[in-house]
Image (cartoon, rainbow, N blue to C red; front, top):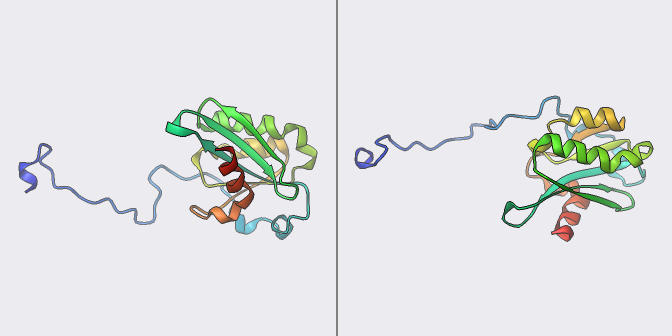
Length: 147
């Protein structure tokens, strides 16, 4: 049947085979290596960060939330590219640099320049597992409220 198609190539299903096609984040540190005190919500200096895409992919918000107090900062981004996201996260958290020990992001490619954020804030950056939204509960809840 494929000989009668316009393309005349047999359709083949792409299997992921365990590899990400768009590349991976270099020097990514898993959430499993994050200190246990960050999970307990005792220390004020642990943050979660994420991006929120607007309706019809028109707008992008960058947000950061403090885990213990549930204090959320948000800022409008021009695009979802890593350079703009890095600048926005740094500008949001620059005032709280002295109270920023860990920052946990989701596994999005927009956080590829996480090492720049770590240098600017002097904080450790960790990444949640892909498709494990419950590892960043505050962030997912605030994303829903912002939407």
